[in-house]
Image (tube, rainbow, N blue to C red; front, top):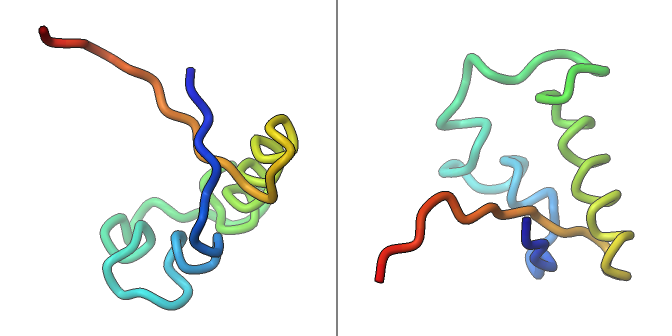
Length: 68
């Protein structure tokens, strides 16, 4: 798993300001706190991942398949 520092503010990435973000595309997915798919759960996870890098927030990526 690779961690990537998030440059944009986390509020922008999870749908507070942009109409084309996750909570707009997946309208049936958000759940109330303390579910991991709640807005607060996502914020906590990004800040925890960022803390492991020394950043404010980070996003994790996993390469599923590499094509040559």
